[in-house]
Image (cartoon, rainbow, N blue to C red):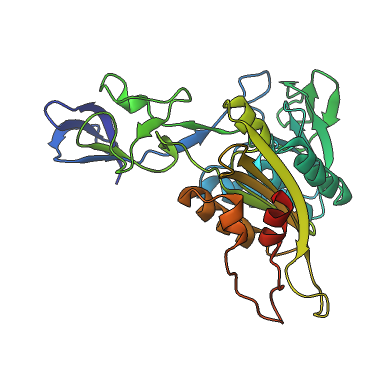
Length: 335
């Protein structure tokens, strides 16, 4: 603890370390090196970004400050910068405290990694919960004195007592400069299946790393009574990647209609036109949405087609699952 690696020499397998308590510098040797330096919130270098109340959320100390700050009675207008998964999670937490919430994002839609019709459902759910949305707006300044008082964008100004920055993460990989470790365009370390980097003996894990083979980018969030989940490629992403795909959307219930509180689940399934192989899915509904998307994620990794996925013998139990699962319903629609 309280030691910082200053540099890495992959040829000699040595790291230069500084003792933060005494300032003493020394070298240490390793047979294998695992880089797990994480990532830092993206900061916005714009006027007023140093005002009290412009806050990122990275560690426990940030959380403690945020909890205490929100106890202040005059902190009522909360602005969240970023419309991704993290921004929506923050919005949910602040809404529970009874505060006014506005999400500002440069993207023309919430959750840009969803297809537009799915993102629209999320937007409607957020607005029903009382969240105000400012889409397609770029922040220009944080007017105020000591504390932030407003957020100024290219379209206007909004009252703000607390601004939470959730605009993404920057991988902490500056330490690897000059080591020969290959980085992705966003600065993350590229790793293979065994988590090894382009330099033998050096590995990377966590938020500072990204797989060479890509990721399914599975994720989910709940907004009010709506649960949303995704995995694999969206229709738009697949087309940008040069794939010929089709999509189909269908709905089914998570349990029989004779049971109390059945929940409708809608699934948008994306598959290749020629091979009919499943490449992605997005789903939304009241409950039990993520479990369906998890099953589709397995199908994508297994290379299943919509036909073989639709023929899977899912468990049927009269009190908790329908005879025809929503996954089977959407696959049947594809046939």
